[in-house]
Image (tube, rainbow, N blue to C red; front, side, top):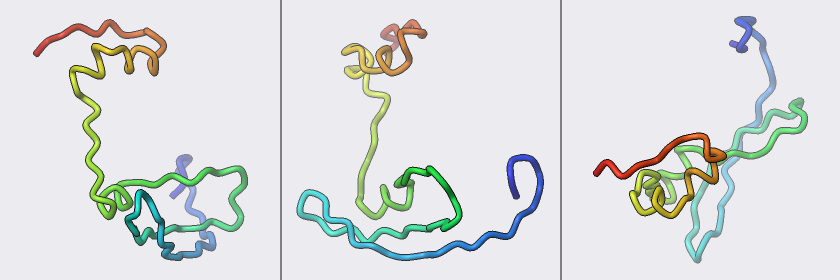
Length: 82
């Protein structure tokens, strides 16, 4: 169902591609929407799980080093609460 609540039937193609990253082979499923225009590929949770990638986006050091304020445009006041 689309965001506007309208159901639509579309053609989707499925393939599995071996991605080579840091000497590791990661079979990754891609869904292709042939009629979509201007879309970018997003590797989601399936890829992260298959690659055994762990993201820790809440490290105190990252906040202290100013990574999040740069991403958020300094719109949030970060303080050490741990």
